[in-house]
Length: 208
Image 1 (cartoon, helix red, strand yellow):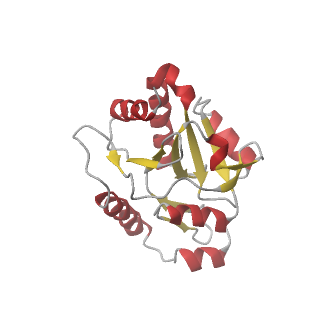
Image 2 (cartoon, rainbow, N blue to C red; image 1 turned 120 degrees about the horizontal axis):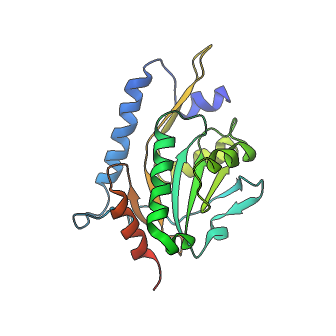
Image 3 (cartoon, helix red, strand yellow; image 1 turned 180 degrees about the vertical axis):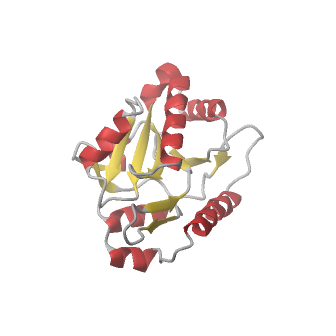
């Protein structure tokens, strides 16, 4: 991990658990600025977040942009392959959501954006995603600056923590950013949203 990048963009300090709580508050505050929706639906963010835009490298080592996935409903999640808590739970949950979509799953796609690009090479991302048996998923990586700009674009907070002699970890939220087939930001889901509700709201974004 580039220490200058970490210090410049995220800061340091030993209180990792407190910072984890702080990251959760950031997500809550971001959601508070979104449109209120009917009870039983995922939080709407139409008009509050920009259209999807990025230029990164896929888990197959190919350059990709948002236009690569045009025509599909996209679920973008920021995580990393060495994550021991949030990521495995979130990816297993998204796997179940894709199964709930049935035949419509081919019209949706998950973008797993690593927040640990120095360790998550394309091959590492591919091996990680294969564990979840999700055909409709792609891992994305890039330079630390490229990942940082994308996270900032969508107000996603993450903070690396690599203590001397330790394995290190990265504090991050569990938000899933959902874009319609035109790449417009439409929904923001979290672990608090039932999988059945998320699947139904994804169907509502699919063209008839």
